[in-house]
Amino acid sequence: MTKDAPAAALTVSEQLDALPFTRRHLRILTGSGLGWALDAMDVGLISFIIAALAVQWQLAPTETAWIASIGFAGMAIGASVGGLLADRFGRRQVFALTLLVYGVATGASALVGGLAALLVLRFFVGLGLGAELPVASTYVSEFAPARIRGRLIVILEAFWAIGWTAAALIGFLVIPSSPDGWRWAFALGAIPAAYALAVRWGLPESPRWLVRRGRHAEAAAIVAEFEVAAGRTPTPVDTTAPPLAAATGGSRLATLWSAEFRRRTLSLWVLWFCVNFSYYGAFIWIPTILVSQGYDLVRSFGFTLIITLAQLPGYAVAAWLIEVWGRRGTLAVFLAGSAVSAVLFGTATGAGWVIASGMLLSFFNLGAWGALYAVSPETYPTSMRATGSGWAAGVGRIASIIAPLSVPPLLAWGGAPLLFVVFAVFFAIAVVASLGVVDRRGQALDDR
Image (cartoon, rainbow, N blue to C red; front, top):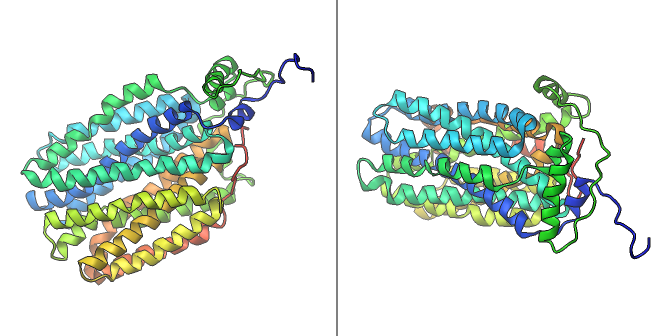
C-alpha cells in the first residue's frame, strides 16, 4: 500500500481491540466502578444494620434473615430481567435505570417505622442492584481491549471492596453513634439516585451493541473519540454488515441451553450459585456472628472493617494473575483458597485468629469474584451477552436468598464450625465447576 493510500476499513471490534488504554477507557471504568462501589456499600450496610436492628427492634433470627433474603429475591429477578433489557434497549440506559431504582428505595428505607415496610423497600433495592452488576460488567467488557479485558473487569470488581469498606466505616462510625444511626446509614445509600443522572448523560453506549442494531454511524463516532484520545487518526469503519434482527427474550434464553452453550451455561450457573451461597452466607452474617460470640457491637464492627480491607489485595493479585494464568486457573485457585479459609475462620478462636482467618477468606473470596465477573460476559456473543450474564447472576441470587435463611439453623445445630464447613463445601463444588468455563484470555469477544 502506498503512503497516500486510504487505511483499510476495520470492524468496530477490531478497532476497539487495537486501542491502547486511554483516558476514555478510564472514564468508562471509573464511571461504572463508582456505581459498583455504591452497590457494594448498600449490600454491606445491610449486614451492619441487621445487627443494630436485631437489638433495637428485638427481632428474632428469622426476621433478621428475611431482611437480607428479601433483597436477594429482588436481586434474582433484577439480574434476570436486567440482562434481557440490556440486550434489547442498550447497556447504558439500563445501567442508569438500575442505579436510580435502588438509590431511591435505599433512601426511602431511612424513613420506615417497622419491619414490613423495610422488607418491601429492600425488595425494590434488590431489583435495581441485581440488574446493575451483570449489565455493568458486560458494558465495560465491550469497551476493553482484548489483551487487558480480564484485568479491567477484575479492577471493576475491585470497586466492590471500596464500597464495602465504606459500608464498614459507616457501620463502625455512624450506626452505633445514636439510635437513629441506621437511618443515617440508609440515607447515605441514596447517593446513587443522583449519580444515575451523571451515568445516563456522561457515558457512551456500547459500540458493539450499536453495531448489532445497525447504528454504524453512532458506533463509529464513539470509536473515533477513543482513537483521538489515543493520539491516532480515526480509521474507517466497516459498515457493510447488515443489522441483525433483534432476538426475542425467549429465543435468547433458549440459546443459552443450545448444544454450543449448554456446558458453559451449566458451569457458570453452578459457579454463581455456589459462590453466592458462601459469600453472602458468611459476609452478611459476620458482624452478627461475632456479636453472638461475645464481642460487643463496636468491636465486632471494627473486626469486620479490618477483615474487609483484605479484599483489595485479593482483587489486585487476581487482576494480575488473570492475564498470566488465564481465567480458569485463576478462578480455581482463588476458589480453593476460599474453601480452606472458610474452614480456618469457622474454627478460629481468639481475636487474632478470627481477624487473620477472616482476612484470608476476604482475600481469596473476593479475588474469586473478580475472576468470575471477568469470565461471565466473555462466555456468550454480543447478541446474548447481557442475558447470559444476567441469568447466571440471577441463579446465583437464588443462593443468596437461601444462604442467610440457612445460617440460623446451621448455627443452632453445629455453631460456626459447621456453618463454615458448609460454605467450604460449596466453594469446593465451585472449583470443579470452574473447569467447564471458557477461557478467552487475549482473544476477541464473539460479536455474533
